[in-house]
Length: 301
Image (cartoon, rainbow, N blue to C red; front, side, top):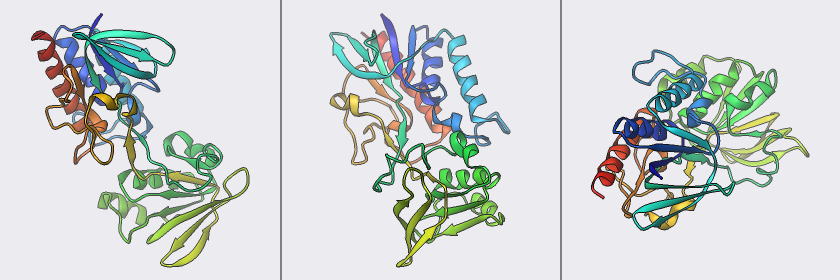
């Protein structure tokens, strides 16, 4: 029996584990993909306190190392269900493994949002990508498109501009939502073209992407690309836990800064929680708050 099971091994989950262990609790962190979370996709992080510059992988490794040094146990598993049983929680995994704890912290993060265009899922891995860090090297010397207007899309475009022959940055509005410094950096790139007021209509090509059809300012246009990187945000991954917490219209856990849910013993932290700002620092802050709330809950059982 664990004191706390943390579902999700990103910055929120690993921070929660560190805080809970330091409070003397036995903690298990369950992560289904890679410890460190989505930050491991970032080639460079320059906005996390204490680090002038660090790769996302290095930062993720440090967070994991710190949690384990404090005593946290870890498992690579996909959680499929949770259920309260008296004063404890039963956590079931896809491999049929199961664990028990007195409290659960959901730090499941969010997954990339899809464009919703025909053949998108079919072409994933054949020209449609959601991680420039993971897949950008496959398109070195080739033309690509990045879809989106926030910081993630701008950062992806900057990264790809270093190796791709041309980068089309496609956004449905006439201006970007991301940081102005990133926009200015892209404006200086001779191989980057802004495609504004444009909506993706179709992927071209049979078995692999060979172009992207867009409607720009009411006119049809074909971008001659071999890769399309989708960076239009994320959606929370909370479907398996929906019976135990309230969610807002976007599907995020409807929990405030206390990280509490309507179910005693269940807490939520990080990008899967409703909030106005989703950054490394806010995820880490959530992890600390959720862990201390869970510790207090256990101590009062």
